[in-house]
Length: 256
Image (tube, rainbow, N blue to C red; front, side, top):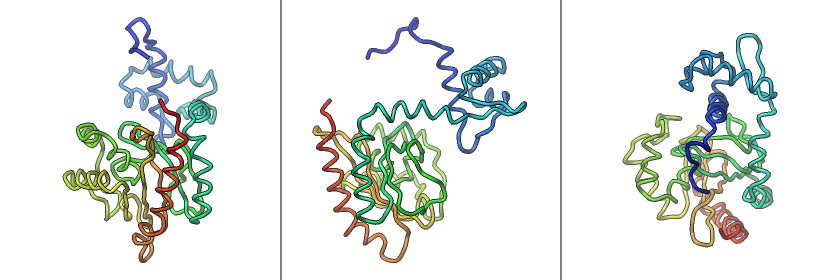
């Protein structure tokens, strides 16, 4: 679709979406002032957007703070239910996870973050509860580095420029040159192996899911507890299964 001309752009709708995006796991309850600060809107605009969301049932107000309601999930579900990729991938994740006895996930890239589009969980090994729609920084997640490696060099560098790079654990790589080298290595090897950079106790390995033309459209990973020889186990046992699953998924992706 062509870019909308000025008369096609609905400013009020865009502002409402920006207000919704102001809420996240760290900012689940916001005042009008909070929303105005985060969005850059004035208080009157922020108030109107918030009250509209409340009227439509997408938010609630306790007299001081606003918070989103479960109805907001309909917006994400509309994408997940209409997009063929999550539907294609989920059965493969279920089978892979059951076979390996570890949790498996798939994600896509959204600016500086990855967004989970499908997941099959075996045991909870992360402090956060990951489900479809969950987000993680691309630069310090195995799937994120796979997705960045699938981009042209100048594009993945722009994403790194826009990323908030700070240590997540004592093992997190935060050196910019080292990160770029790791992404280059992922592109060369066709997989990413990470040892507790995102969270202590978690090792993960990820591979790309490609179209017939070779374009990376998603990533697939296995996460497992960090134990002795965990990295060796991942490359010798999990990687072949991951690659086979990614290949099987790729064969079903519609040609566009």
